[in-house]
Length: 258
Image 1 (cartoon, rainbow, N blue to C red):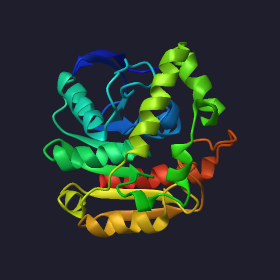
Image 2: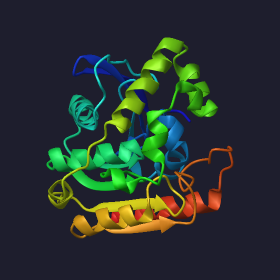
Image 3: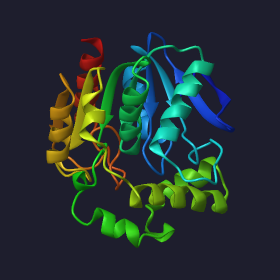
Image 4: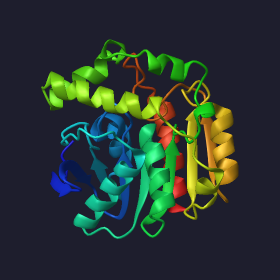
């Protein structure tokens, strides 16, 4: 895919990479842990680039963006995203976040309501109890050898530095190990329309997705018959269910245009 614009913006002390596609109302795409913007949203971009102005960002320590040595936080990611949009002259945007990116876009909606038009939060988490049984126990013992090979290969293709790969893994894993529950009031404070999405065999539970949906006034919820993210990208085996992705992104488009 050929981006209409790509480059770096220095925000909050580091260079962050972005790409833009299409035209129309802004929709900012925020990837999950261990990934990059284009990796998570390639199928989304193909389907929505003719309807929206898509801003695809690589977060700190990921993709082509620079790294920090300090602990990674969802609040810092939120502030970085808002700062890039300000540099690009975008005063209001909708946001589509996947996995950790979904938690980030909910943080944006909570901390920066003035910039948030609509929110799609796909497979995000706001409470430790929202993850499947054993998730945090596994994280406590995880090493980079447990990181999926396809994510390691993708990182090194964009940024061939094993030390930076280790830094990204360490920052992502430590953020989840030390994850703290959000207060219910944080979600209840969100005024932007929110569309929650998850799979019935996701790493977050359907019950948690339903609870977040209950807390955000007027929000919508869609639970799909699949695992983590395979409603919007290839699954962990590399298989792409185009029909399911077509359906999911069509529902996202309807939500954004409603």
